[in-house]
Amino acid sequence: MYTINVTSMSIKDAPQQTLAEWIPTFVPPGDLPVDGVWALDAEFCKFATGEGPTEPALFVLLPHLDERQLRAVASTAMSVINVQSGDLLHCETYCTFGNQILELRVPGALGKWNPKCPGDNVFQLVLISDEHIVIARHEMDELELDSLLDGMQGQHDSSGPNYNPVRVWGDARLDEVAHLGSFRQTEENVLYACYAVAPRSPWAC
Image 1 (tube, rainbow, N blue to C red):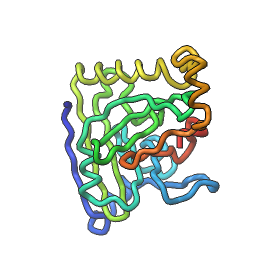
Image 2 (cartoon, rainbow, N blue to C red):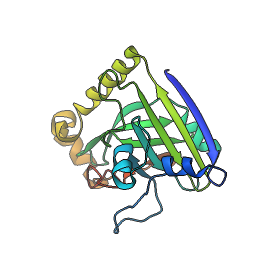
Image 3 (tube, one colour):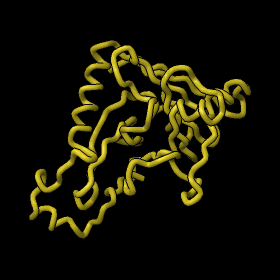
Image 4 (spheres, rainbow, N blue to C red):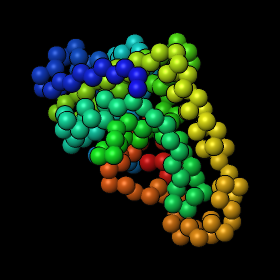
């Protein structure tokens, strides 16, 4: 596993400079509930507020989680998976953080927060709850970055517009699960983040 340095602080005790740098303005679309798991990348934060970190960063608002839960999610290495809808007609790529007790899944195309090429070997995951901020600095060497990018590319090659459910599953299997609908199967220990600006697909949130 690559190196992850985790820092946590109470929002009420954090210096104002830290708050300005690490808490973006989350403004979900008006037709979506405010209470939920929302994500923004550093580029949007800088555009909207003029503040933000210089390194690639992903901000995730996780209301109601305590500091222990935030640290557990933040201190695990990122992995990349594909998730199918119940009826198997849709497939999307997610970057995941966490473990079997609590897992955070973020759409794999959230913008400029994730490493894209050699040299982009550091990114920061900033988790914000009602009371705490947890900042995890993920640092990879070239081999670790290459492995991550290869895995990400492999998953993207078989998801989204590249996903062909008939070829993968066959008509008989698709008929069996058609009644499950075009939504993900829910899992109690998994939190799915919605991009607060523009979700990739109708069922991704």
